[in-house]
Image (cartoon, rainbow, N blue to C red):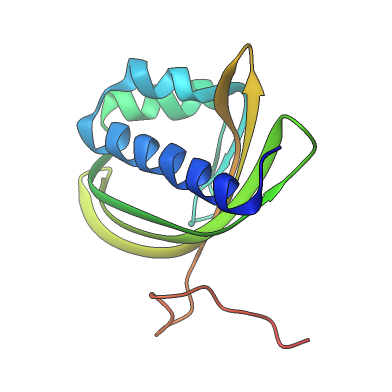
Length: 139
């Protein structure tokens, strides 16, 4: 795995690509970024795998108006995977209801057959007043 600055740049690039695909509505291209082993935990606590996420995306259960994914840290997990964390700001229609979501999130990306694919996504609503940065534990 490359140095931390390179890894942070890679994570930012992958997340920017994913955000653009979410907003564009291109389900086929988005599916190409997702691992068959995807575990996707929404900020609401609902869970999806690749099939259910893409199905809901195609059916319009969520329609992303804007996605701002700010990667703040990245850490290698061996030679072919990494985790990244940051802040998400979303404007999304969920079952036809517009929601503005600010969440802290963690993603895991892994190389599969020569391509980077999203394996895990976990988001949780950000603490009030913390939209610009992730909360840090003082423990």
